[in-house]
Image 1 (cartoon, rainbow, N blue to C red):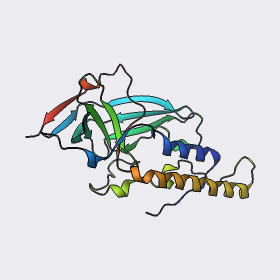
Image 2: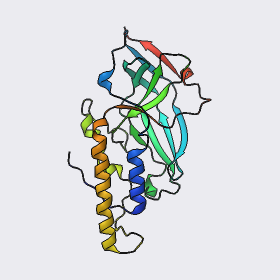
Image 3: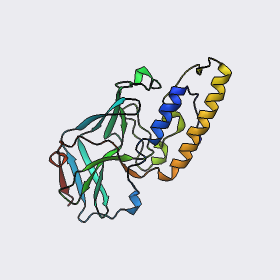
Length: 226
């Protein structure tokens, strides 16, 4: 896949690295390692699950799992993974805090991606929200990729990098320094992406989950396929 690296300001480089590494400490599971649920089950979500959190330079985000059917993708020894469609989860930057690499026009505008719930077998454990690691978010609803073409929705560098300065100049004020800085930034970002490729397509528990007082098990029902 050809990847184009956009020019970056320092703020953009910071935001890019945060975008690539956020959640790296949370567990990942390859779908190919899951066993089929017997009998097959789906999860029905009647109302959205919405919550907010702050992370990285006090950027405030909102995550929402949208109502609909989440298909049972399989289970491991701990629980079952239920995945929604390509537009089942929205992530919205509500306040960019100190990360000025976020364009103002993107504040408050949701992006769409595949979201899901991991439901532990132990009823005493809390379900967890997950996403597909490396999937490129969509900015317009209705533009879902055809099923089975996940490679077209992986994260390219020019999307992961959320700073889009038309004429980047670093603190020195020198366009030459800006060019050098952009080249260094491009190399760092490209290197991070290459390191991440092996994990693209895995299910990853999102680092920030709904507040503890949220009783997620009351928000959905599990149905058995006939």
